[in-house]
Length: 233
Image 1 (cartoon, helix red, strand yellow):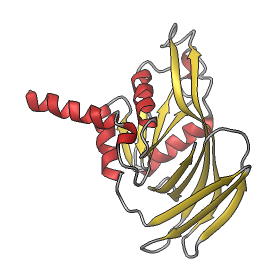
Image 2 (spheres, one colour):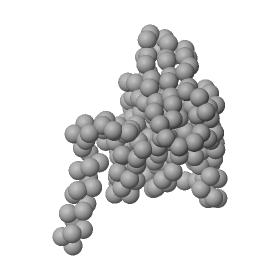
Image 3 (tube, helix red, strand yellow):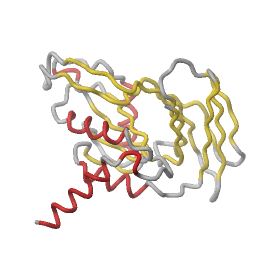
């Protein structure tokens, strides 16, 4: 029993450690969540803690398949449901659910199980994927440079993500009726902006506007592993 309690304390310390952890490769954590899901608020709180860590890029993607029960998620986008289904297909799974966290594009865990979340993040935190990514923003211009540091090229996608850092929602109907919930790092845009195979260095510039944070992700094609990611807050 004492060992179990000690393990839980150690896990929660890692989860909430924030900037005390050394920043190496940032691990992308995608939370698939919904305002209409009664199991999701604990996962939303976990994402809040992960968002404070320098070694994690925490992103909340609100799906639309809970809308039918009486409350339409104000952040939901069918594109995020489609992305979650693509992950399920890549993992040979027939179903999707909330809350789910996809970590590094490869680990699928129940989003309100903190120990599993931390273990998955720690497993990927110092992994060398062989892709070096540099992103610089100058006003409305975003310069993206990437190259392979080892291995051979493969089909990859360069993706641009924007998100709203914080928003509070008063939910009036559905499973969470009567609750006011704070949501963090709510994805508002997730676009593929370039295909890249690594045979030559990537050097591109894209336009961005507004003050929302920017995330650039290099991911293996067909919802494979995330190979590199940079966050500009």
